[in-house]
Image 1 (cartoon, one colour):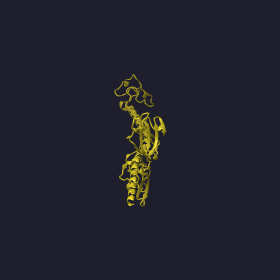
Image 2 (cartoon, helix red, strand yellow):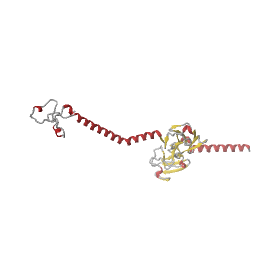
Image 3 (tube, rainbow, N blue to C red):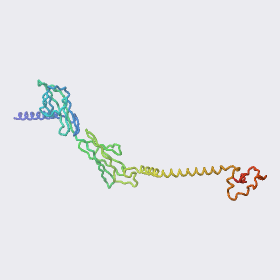
Amino acid sequence: MTTVKKKMASAATITVFLLCCFITASTGSQDDCVYAATGSTFTVPLTYKLKESDHLKWIKDTSVIFNRRQKQVIMGKNDDVDSTGSLKLTKLTKDKSGRYRPEVHNTNGQNVGENLPSVHLCVLDRVQKPNVTMTCTGDKTRVSFTCSVGQNEKIEWFKDGKQLAEKAKMVTRVAKDVANAHFSCNVSNTIGSEISLPVQQICYKPFFSETIFGISIWVLVGGGAGMLCLLCNPYILTCVALLKYERELYLQWSNQEQEQPDYYDHRYLQQLPGNTSNMAENTNSPSNIPKPGICTHCGLKRDDLK
């Protein structure tokens, strides 16, 4: 009786072992996964050159999902495969994960695709854009940043664009040491990655802030000075033009003062009232003979004209 029980136990153990082996062979491990994102399209290639007379099957794990004998589709739809017989999977969902393998038989029923490769497809959700939340601790002397992350997703932390060593969901710092720093996290899986918007601590507020509304104060000062120069520039140009014009008028007037008329030609001075003291009464008298340095019309001397 004891021997019979031992044999039954051994048989049960062997059965469980074979079942595990079958499941492993059918579904495969995660290491040989071909990854695809939910909502995307994936094509499982058929490496055999298919003939019109061939009988084609596509099997997912242990279930037949497509069956076509010659040109007649018995299971599935014509659009499920392309012209080469490759399987087309559209609008992927997680339940489409599994091992896909083809079977091809000729008209004689012979399996001509016995060693055709299978594909273990693993469908994953796309990474969502993460959010970083900030929390003050220790009477606002310390600050913690927490990244929203899904399952089986990797985290990378960045401070002012430079990667940090932390890989955990949360990082903590002394608030004063990171007063003006910006923290962000990058979340990734096999499908892709997304990075959060940068977040700045508000636990510690320095007396003099180097930024206003996220903009450096020196940028604001420089921009203000530039705007002031632009506003004042028209007035400066006007003043320069006026000064230049006044200088030209002064030079013109000065040149006219220096360019005196010839002292022998001052008839216009005769029309001035009271200027008759030096005029000759008789032009035929010897006293009216021109003298050097004296005008014959008005009697002015050279020195009087300067």
